[in-house]
Length: 248
Length: 319
Image 1 (cartoon, rainbow over the protein chains, first blue to last red):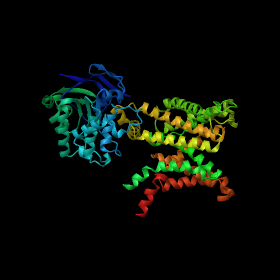
Image 2: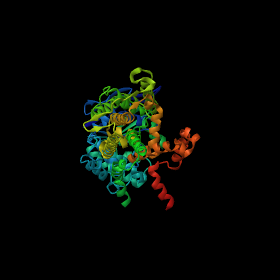
Image 3: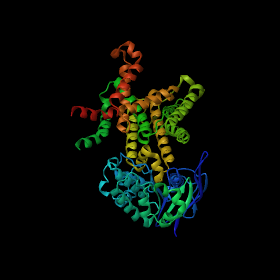
Image 4: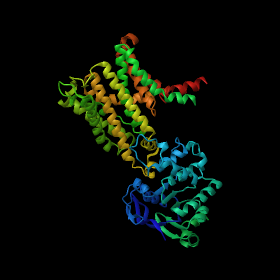
């Protein structure tokens, strides 16, 4: 297996609360690895530590065999870790294209080149257009991002992540608040992205998770209680008691 | 839209009008326009911070004052300094202090950032206020204005064109910056800094670069102010001055370069109007801060987008 990103004994303590407790996970190229668990299980904290938004209390994070535990978030992003947010974080006044172009610009910065217009940037514009095409937003490229539907904004959130040309995608509830049609479109998109990326998917929609995930990790109170193939997770008695059982 | 194309050329038209203006102005109005030009450079430098980057600073006058003091202190006592070298020294001194202040204050956010920039400006204020370095509270005179060849900044007309060149240069630089990748990154940081970090931008360095550039341009305004008046005092660094420049860009309209210029003009003209006894009467003229304050409150209430939003507002009303 081609492991891109992994964490070993990853721990985060908030005061007396251990939000993530010695989590050891790996994320491989070509695989959708879903992390499920009830609210407060530590899923978002896990993503925040992997993306570098939150410092770790203990443990290590490795990207491609390199220890990146102490790297700040922008450096991790440039090294190929992209993330989307549970709450939509697009730039509503900018056009859809500019949202993606700005994300792509991080790798083609040249901030000193004041005489070059950003809109004519030969590095970031083609990447942004490709990301929009991949996310199915090519037709609305010139619209203000704030005018998109909820589903469209969620798609843009993913497209902005893709525009940074990441190898690892950390997706925090990409299906939140989506209708069934929009969900289908997003799942189809994730299926196409699988080939070139290692995907961590945090999601509450269990049907979607069991359809698309190659492996599933179950977290309860900050601890990983199982990591396995979807069928094995469904059959796991510990998981049924701790999590799936609650939902009938 | 035809209107947009017309508006695009407006800054050039204004620059051309300003270039021929001295030939038709009386000395009094000419002084007023010169003052507006210098303060417009100062307002533009703050617009880079507040409007373009979303950093509200309440200590921007420190860089104006340091630029102004440098102009006096770095000049030879009796000979005229080279205006280009002296200008560079002023810009450099202000930028250096901005690098120091920015490096520390940009670790804070929001209201804390406002307070920390204010504190650093007060520090600089008291250095000039309480030490003999720049003549203490009395301030210090610039004995010989900078000159080079036929150019003598002591001549009002010569100085006018020096200030105008500085304004055009500053405006042009910021207009370029706005459309560049650097400017777009600053806009992204203003709207959602966390998202920019997630995309891979080292946002701290971007904000620091903007802060230093804003300080440098304020230093340029300070250089012009010192040469115009031939005199500097600690009040240039006071928080009143920082507040006044913030009012200028709010009055004009935050988020637009021309807003900063319009705001500087409106501020200077309103102040002149309210402080002239012949127009408003002796009593009101003595309390011009009061009338100016009320006017600004009225402006902000009626034109939340500033004077720049006036035409849109009028169109909305008349249509």
